[in-house]
Figure 1 (cartoon, rainbow, N blue to C red):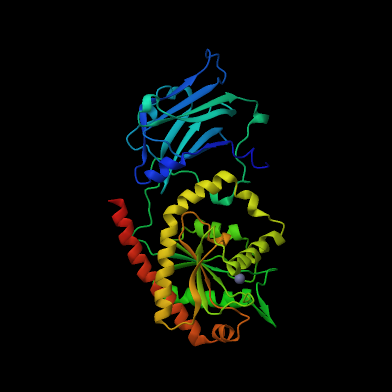
Figure 2: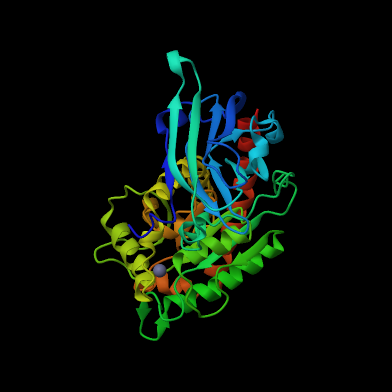
Length: 408
Ligand SMILES: [Zn+2]
C-alpha cells in the first residue's frame, strides 16, 4: 500500500448519499466543537474536532504543509449558514475556514499549531435514531519528521487547487463560451493503429485541428490535449481538460478493427462494466500506452478516490450519455456511416473524469478500407466536424435546461 501514507483515512456513507443526492447535509454548529486535551503549556496539544451534520456524507482527510493544515473534503456539506469563527474552541487553532469549494465539494481547512497526525476518524449516526451524523477526528502532535502532508503523488485528478475563500468559488462559467477539450489519441512513441505508413496518431491530430477550427468558428473555446506528435499520458489528458475548466471532453480515435467486427463511426461513453469484447480489447490496448513509459497509473486511482469519483460520475454520466445521443442524431442526419452499435459503453480510462462529460469518438477503423478512405476524404471530415459542432450546440442547450431544472 504505497498510497497509504498519502491518504490517511476516509469514511464513506454511500447508502444515504444515494438516497438523498439532492439534499445536501448541513453543518450543525451546536453539535460541533474543537477541544484540546490537557493544560495549555504553550505546546501543541492533542485536538479533537467534532462536526455535527444533518446527515452522513463521504469525506476524506489529509494534511498540507507550510503552514501545517488539516484539510477535509466533503461531498457535500452546506456550510453557508455557519460562521467558522463561531465554532466552539475555534481559538485553539490559528485559522479555520470552510465553505463550498467547487460544485459538489465542500472543504474545511484548519491551520494547525504544529505538525500533527490523524489518530482517529469516525462518522457516527446520532443517538436515539435522530437524523444526522457527527464526524469526529482526533489529532495528535508529532515531530516534524513524522508529519505526513499530502505530496504530489496522489492522482492529479485529486490535486485540486486551493479554495478561493471567502469567495467560495462563486465563479461558475455561466454566460461564458462553452469550452471543449479535444483529445487526439496516442502520439509520440505510441502511434496507435498503423496501416502501412499511416499512423493513427497523425490522422487524429489533423482531424482534431480541422474540428478545432470548425468549433472555433461556431463560437466555442477549444483546448487540445496535444498539438503535436508528442506522448501525453491518459491521466494527463484529463488533467489538461480540468485545468482548462473544459465543459466537455471529446477523445478522438481511429483504431485497428478488431477481427470480425463491423466498421463505421462509433461513440463510446464510460461504462466500467462493459463486457463487450471489442471495447475491452481497445481499452486494454489504449491503457497499455501509459504502461509503456513505466507510468503504471492504476495505482494512482486509490480505492477511495475511485469510490468518490464514482459518486461524482453518477451526476456526470447522464450528461455524457445525453451528449452521445445528440452526436448520434447529428451524425446520422449528416449521413456519416455508423457502426452497427453506434453508441457503446467502454472502460476507457480517459473517459473517467468525474466532473466533465466525456465521450470517445472512434471516427472509424484505419484498417477498414471504407473507413480509411473516409478519414482521408476532406468532405467526410468536413461533414463529420459540422455534425459534431451541431451536436455540441444541441446538447449544451439541453444541458443548460436540465441544469436549471435540477437547481430548482
Ligand atoms: Zn486509438
